[in-house]
Length: 244
Image (cartoon, rainbow, N blue to C red):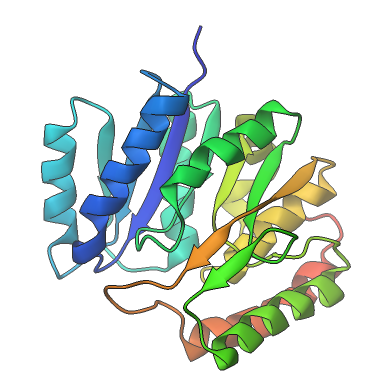
């Protein structure tokens, strides 16, 4: 029986990007998992029409694209949790996270899946291992990103170099084991919490070098509130030894 791969793309005001991201991801998935994949767009009621475009993409896809409409904008974490629940309920064997803004190169999907095939339970697309890179960022943004990853590594005592990245491939068993309903974080620290839970449950985590590209269209979802959430939650995650 072929393995089923689900790719989850959360969206909020990504009208200029979602069509290109969906097409490129679908093409790569057809190459590496022909006939056994689904792209799930999780839209938080985008006022710019992203959800309506996503519905048209789904209607034209022949069943490979699905849309999950959410009534409120609650943040990255809840959107992914809703997507995970749908994918697991549908029988997904592998679940991939990918940004909608083309900052993650869809052609790297196959490399993440290959890392799972080689024995990893969770494959992380990493900017900060040998071979990884960031394109088109200024010095300040590079410093903030690296500083955030270093802070998370030091607080949590994890050897993983890119804890805040959001390009990931999970075995189904990982998502089933890490008690998703109890995940507390909403912003980008959500990515840190998932990886921490996987490590604490004894799953193997591998970093796959990727190049991260700055978005060309739309605005970043990073905010002061998200940064404050991260600084506040990370020490609490460290203290919760039974996490996962």
